[in-house]
Figure 1 (tube, one colour):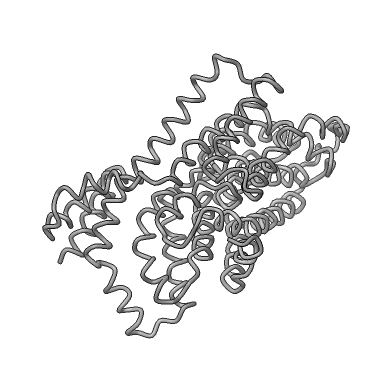
Figure 2 (figure 1 turned 180 degrees about the vertical axis):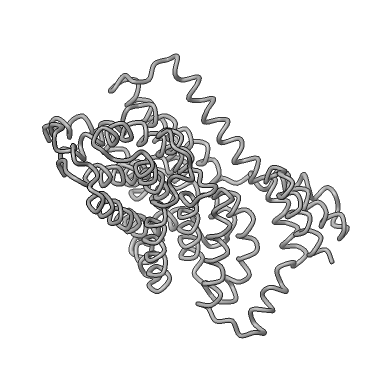
Length: 427
């Protein structure tokens, strides 16, 4: 009875438009009250949900995204990409995906990357003859890869929710799938551009000198080397790496490029604080829901059904993929993790799925949802910058979603694509 009450309460509140964090809290409170678990468990779990060391990295990486968004690194990386691959039909979309992947190795924030890359690339792609809806789709899809390439805010949240999945192991596991995801997006981006004859005037724009472009972009190129290399060499932990990245970004923006002034700092800090505050409050509120689900064994009937009906590992995974892809169309990534991870951990144990591998799969599915209409946070950012409605991007998004789904099947069939790197690095 309590199981029905908690989920019915949550679904009704979501339909009524109640914020996700409040809906999770009220649903959890209904279960806690009905099972007489003690009302003090609500504030205790609210505090315990965010009183975790790995979460200290989250606001700092949000700040890193805000700093590099303002620093002008994206524009210099675009010039460097053009200097390498040149200009021609399909080259600007390819560069947009590449730059988004690289920025993912700095901040790990999809919306921040969509804003940074979109601010630089959309105008250039429009002048080169690319339709705004197509350009917005390419940038929105490319920015979704950021949550796979370390450092990743999504991996930090997942590591807090799942025992046995450390942040360094998840960061390492995301490298190869993140790179493959970028390649999977480049293929339809270039093919669509050439198939429809987009970018006909691209070659008329002069190609920047390679050495000058490399010199200008060198400070941005060094950022992921500093972050990931420092963690691997043991100079700092992932949490400390976030602080180092933020200080480095401020140094590059204020001293090297001089695109950030003292007056800009307050706005940057406020934006980062607001974003971080929203995420952390949702995590804290969702901890109440997770406590009720785990303590009352609400997921046990689901696991028993899977066992009684002899549902195999691949059949269970296929069901999870369908559900998460559908949910990803209407919920943001953090909410998906907070709602579904407590429900899926028992299944993970039954089928002996590696928690790191499963974390990469979940993050991959969330990445697809970030550019799948009707609610696609990255696509919303890029579409707004391009001046188009999000429904205008749906026809283009289908191709990128299909390409990512093919890669998702490959990752399920070959777990070593995610697990080889953490094992090789000893995590």
